[in-house]
Image (cartoon, rainbow, N blue to C red; front, side):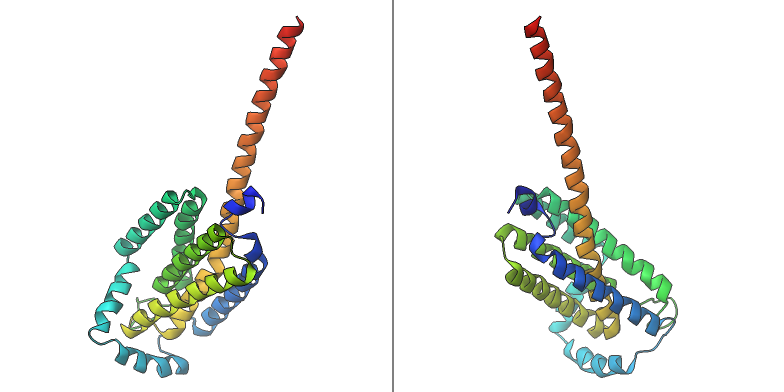
Length: 240
């Protein structure tokens, strides 16, 4: 493994797999968006899931759901992002810190844009619900943490992909349970949010790697040119 590969936020061993997953997730997001565009009622599948999920969110589990919901709000998400950036810097992974900020921002921005485009509502007009931003954000954080762990531990394809998918599934299911149980989203909204994170994070990680690698190459080339100029200058003075 090269030094550049070891620093990558998107581990080379997972690139092909995560790109395929990203494409499939994008197709699911688009398909659900088209299916529920302009709707304000739950689908049949939503109705099957909403009742038992709502019944499960009773004290003390309701307090857990409310705490999870807070983590997806602006104040709570800001706390998680700051903690994530601090953790990456403590581990001496500045590139991963950039991914945390960029990944969270792009995921939230994408869900916000999709809500406006799809126009699905819950509990009346004005309450846009598809896709679930809380679920997307929480899943995105789990994905980025799993990518960091995969690279740092040097995991292979099977172990790395298993870790990434398991982290995404647990995070998405946990936040989806909270949002559906509290009545903030339909189950299909949570699925759309989960897929949005799966679509956005691999692409964001690849873009961060490309941008940082280019900056590093330019800095290296500039330094090499400066050393060459100095060496050439010294040689000329010696010949004189």
